[in-house]
Picture 1: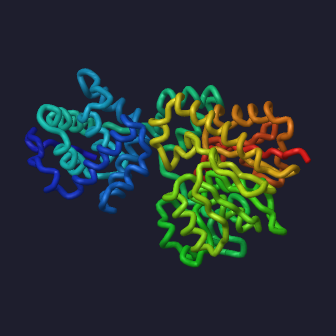
Picture 2: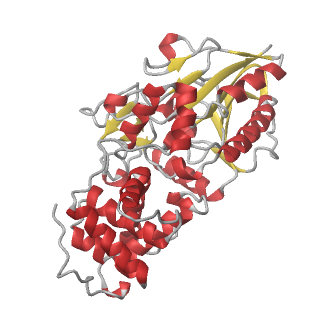
Length: 429
């Protein structure tokens, strides 16, 4: 991939409105700023973009920049006399230009021409010069992305070096598409199945364009996310389950499909709209309630409760690389405290002899093991109920207390799975 300056001059472009695709680059630069400086979620911010084409391209550029951010910054810092400030617009412009050229196979002249209008004055010449120097010198990214130092340190301390390396390998590409089949559906017979009722499809597949979507034969749900609801077994005989913090609804549909009389509770009406749409599409039934779990009260105790608590979501780093850069230890601690409060409240809604499952899509032990351990210390009427070997696939890890983890090394050869923690408790009769 060769890059040559035209007689040493900058490309003759100054107005981003006159350059095809420049609007998406401006959006990508803004998305990076919102994630890195303001700590906002990438996907939620991208939804605000009015044009779908700009949204897709901006997400692709920003997503690749976030996957490879430490490595892109290392290239930039190696080509400047002194490091640019972390929030300098010139650094942001170089990040998205390099992400396009080195990861998205954008021709270098197009990558730089669409980025230069985003910076003015001296920084414009700096961006052009650094980009040209790097491309002429054969700049390349490592085989695997480098995790942010703070994340690597946390995960190394919690899970060991092998899991850090597995996480790096999985971060390099967006994940495959996992779907859960409705009972009786037989779609995607040739696709890999990692557990009963599951299929894994190639990345980049548009769900709505796949066979069986309109018929409601399946829904999108990560393989690891399909496990917690399985620990509640089949409902049968009208047994009642509360699915707390239920949106976007994969677990609610699992429970409804397993015969439970499900009530799905979530504080976000927007996210519950997706759940309602999916219930209608699949023909499954569940009561849907918009409410804050910390303020809501059920009409009666339930036979089982599933709490998929709000968390840092660092286990979803494969599809949401922004979590690696915007989630800080303080937020993890605050989320863990909120999870403890939700778990204590949910425990009151389980009938004697019933089951309670607590789950988080996090790779932080403060949000999983620590919360579950504290809960058991304070509740003499509950005990951990470890899963039987046949209840979970071999790629999960269960500790001596019966707590279950899905770590980065799980299914590494098959494209990985979300990092997850879950535990099952039984209330005394």
